[in-house]
Amino acid sequence: MGSMGGIRGAAGMNPGGSLGGGKPVVPRWRQLGLSESKPMRFSPKMRAVSLATGAGVVASGVWHNLAAKPCLALETSTREERLSRWMEGWSIGRTAFHRAEVNATIIQNEKVWLATDSKLRVLVPLCGKTVDMPYLAGLEQVHSVVGVEGVPLAIEEFIKENPELKMKRVSNTEQFQVFKGKNVFLHLGDFFEFGQDQNFDRVWDRGSLVAIQPALRERYVALLDDVLAPGGKILLEGLHRKKGPEAACKKGPPFSLQESDIKNLFSSKKYTVKKMSSKNILEGKGGEEYARFKSEGLTVMNQEAWLITKKM
Image (cartoon, helix red, strand yellow):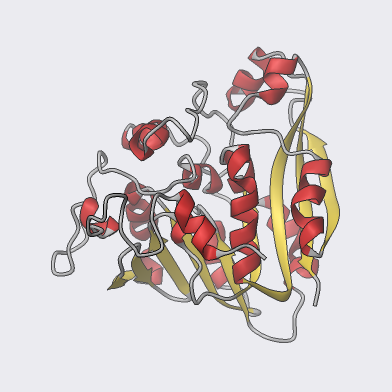
């Protein structure tokens, strides 16, 4: 079982809740220029606060058409450097990865993933503005959906594009601003500081695990393990860069996620792992959304869906 202390440590905080040197923590939402009294107004150039290399952007849609620049090493880059590419993408409207339709992996696996006799609480890590959230929130078996996102503009656009949810800011904490609507909650902040006092029955991971640096995967899974109830299920969609030049197979984001990676990450934590589907998305006419991957020399890149169940 992963500890939250280890996860917060990755975000640059010590157990006492302050940054190195003993200086008081400035709440993340104040760093964004927001206040408790002012109405929510986001600037496209506001800093994001997610540690996870801006992966919330990727999680909002498929990971196609991402910028080709390599990610900076976590150990040597600042949070701003890690997130600059994602913030720039949102600010100039480079969000071709966003899809207007509900993800097909959810539709295809909905019955087995959401089978239950009780109402479910669903977590969507690094959620962006995905339409999957209101879809899930509208299902009879779902009690609520909680999305966590580090890019303010993604939160703003989600709220504007889903007026029927009537999203309003309801609380501010040291790490997060929280917005609430009809069965949907959004947490604006660093995903690696999320999880305390949270409990979920299901997790929808679309592109998060492949977007973060591989060195952070164990911490990410530890956080999921902390908040997922026994018997809970994770529906995960990832990419396996299977055939092509070695450099292209190791490139990212999105970073390749193989079956052995999934099993190593989850089997040690007493999960069962089942592959639900696998498709080479580079076959046939890939269009512009696959052009970068083809230009790297990749010939097989499998989009794979996994059902990961936490044992009782």
